[in-house]
Length: 328
Figure 1 (cartoon, rainbow, N blue to C red):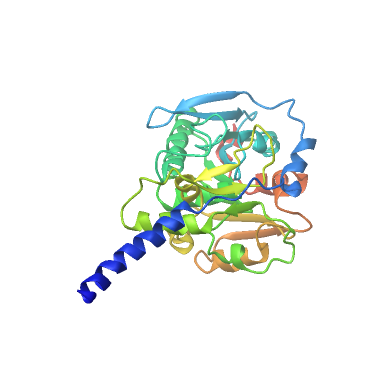
Figure 2 (figure 1 turned 90 degrees about the horizontal axis):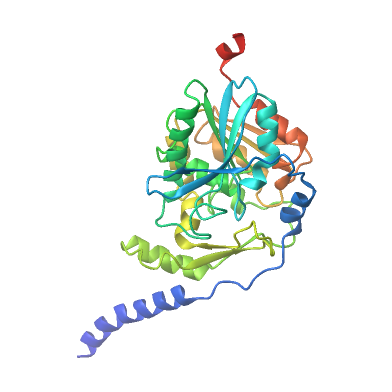
């Protein structure tokens, strides 16, 4: 009888521990992370493109802003960072358009005007949206080479999409200060430029519990919130992600995804990045993709890579053009 009770106790205790992990509360609302949010207060949005919509495969409208280039020789899809929306890509989109690249900046599923704020229907849906939107772009501009550009967490989504086969035939994958995964060295290495406060506050116990359930094939609780961002009270920002949105954005197998990318890769970051240890990008990427171009821009922090003129110029220069169109 004692042996039987002992055998029965093991799964009961395991279930209780798992329940406690899942029930662990998310962090309270943190104070705004000034170096991430404040720089956008100085951006001139007077020329920002209006919102349009195109349907994803499930019928939900993907919100986007289109910046038309005169005599366009290329196109680019821009993916914003965590908590943000397409508005944050305005300066980069303008710089690209002025350089001959028609830029499309979308509200990633779970952000802005695309879907339900902070959540998605299933893990991987944002990458599926990338595939659907690229198809829309090719229909609009069939002769233009298309690059996929992702910033920060949007860089993680761009890597997910390209590595999982959701971004076929792109001319280049351009990662700007990207989130390469929580276990990747840029996320784990000592960062001499790290800020005193954090931008993201993950609920580690709940993430562990839900990951265990996912491994067992159960996704019924993936809607639960698992991370809070220091986004403040801006109505344009999405301060909380569900488990399925977080997993959709962050690469889960960095090396495997990098290896699976068919397109040329360019990675750009500031050498003063306060969110990721940018000095670790080259080793992480070159270990799998030795031909990838990795560039660190001197004196620039994380958000500056989407706002500083030197960064915008470097990103625009990384976009491949159709030389034949230039000869018209």
